[in-house]
Amino acid sequence: MTRIPEEMIETIRTKTDIVDLIGEYVQLTKRGKNWFGLCPFHGESTPSFSVSEEKQLFHCFGCGASGNAITFIMDIENSPFTEAVVKLADRTGVEIDIGPATSEGSYASKQSDEHRRMMEAHTLATSFYSHLLLNTVEGEAALQYLEKRGFSREYIEKYGIGWALDNREALSELLKRKSFDMKEMERAGLCIMKDDGTGYFDRFRGRIMFPLRDDNGNVVAFSGRTLSKDKQVAKYLNSPETPIFEKSRLLYNFHNARLNVRKTGKVIVFEGFMDTLSADRIGVSNSVAVMGTALSDSHIVKLKRIAKDVLICCDGDDAGWTAAKRFADSLLAKGMNVEIALLPSNFDPDDYISQHGGQAFIEKVIGNPNSYMSFIMAFAKRSKNLTFENDMLQYIHEVLSELVNRQSPVERDLYMRQLSVETGVSMEALGQQFLKLNGKQASLSKKMNQDIEKQESPANGKSKTATDRAERLLLCHLMNDGALFDRIRDEFPELFIKDVYQAVFIRLAGFYEQFGAPDYHRFAESLEDRDLRKIVLDAAMVERDPDHKEEEVEDCIQHLVQQRIRLSIQDKLNESKTAEKLKDHTRALELAREIIQLRKSLSAL
Image (cartoon, rainbow, N blue to C red; front, top):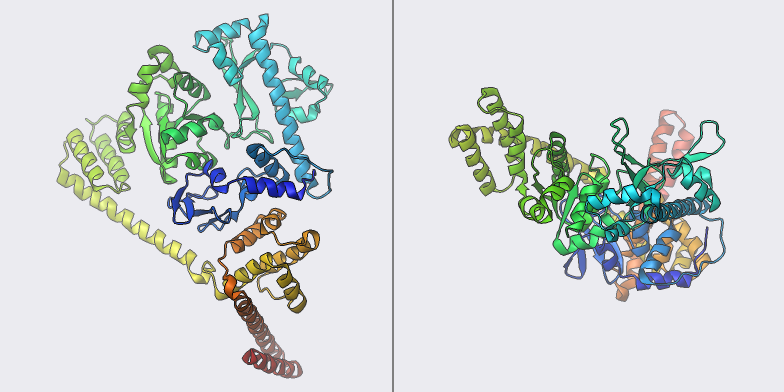
């Protein structure tokens, strides 16, 4: 693993403003000294994620996640330490002078190096495909097709669109000439091994190539569109999932949309990436697309980082309506505000823009969205004939079941009146049915709240005990005072009660031996175990009293020593009961004497 000089790490950390950094992922609002937002590490509807500008640390009071700028990147991007530092260096404009390799973290380094090579190969493939499309006779037909679809050369270059030759080994030969490991290229999804094992051939052939980019703008996969009219040939062929590409994590155009979403306060979600490309060409630059029909929890976490309001725009066919409802339900469950833009039947956004123009799409489609309830009523009505009693009753039930979950009395009244007009059922009857459904919902909610209270009760270990607070405060002092650490290590080598704190204490000893001076930022970054890192940075957030440091430390020590004695007494009492059951009177008497001595020492403290 490459080694970055310590002073360079400190420079990068110092130059990174944690509020600005996290603000690129999470919407933050200032309250008092700190900034707050929705935690990106777990689902929540009430902000419990705090960022301290003064300490350059973050902490979630919900899930306990804590860290600094570097560990934030490590956790949010699932990156090894070196990769996180390099990313922040690029962001801050610091040129990194990487030293010789060390054995520590070699697996993470190898993994990171493999990812880098895979991305380099995709970058090479993007340039190769682009050249073939724009500068060769073989790419003319594809270029003409794109131009007819409204793609100018400027936009083709902007998106990196290209053409894959109808040749089995065009890219594979190029990759070999550039000395890429072909087994690695197969794992990257760019080529496939021949059946006889004698070589490799290209995965994509005779297709228009659309690069798929990760959150940082790196090409990690492709989607290839055929020009063939043969219905047996798949219209689109996507890269398989690889170490650098997961469909459930990638949102098309997220790297571009992120800044534009912050300007508008709203993100548009499409089903397909061609819809996003078409929207961008008409000036709608705050959209993303899923790579499939599912909107995953990972997708939603990303969307919540950049916006509270989401506009869903799916295809106008039955599958599109179903996808829109599925998207909307998932987003609402995570506390987001949702609207749905509807298209005429059998139109997708790309087709609508091509036939009716960008202005019509902006004004009539995304400029005239439906509220969630309005969409639900239309959705529920699509498959029903309200002249049939069963269909009408089912329609009423579906709409009222959704209204039970709506908090606004005005919204409930509005849609119940609309429902009454549509069905001819009186407001009084609808109101009685609503109250019945609402009662069932209230009973269910009460039971769920009781279950949650049980999970969060002190008996389940959720509340911090006096021992928790003492260990946390003492660790905070130890991380800020090397001399104090030396004293505690010599006098109380096994002071901490919980194993996780003792594990941090042992690693802190190693850190001081290597670095000498206190630096809780660097100490946390040196820990590969995320749980230990959480303990360290949670302790770093503790407010110490510099004027009463000695008193605080002594109080912590006294409490932990007393607690150790109490635990020892309890252990010996249990052992004594066992000895008495076994009629080992000698051992029982010996334990009784030890318990008396321990109780005396406890009283003396």
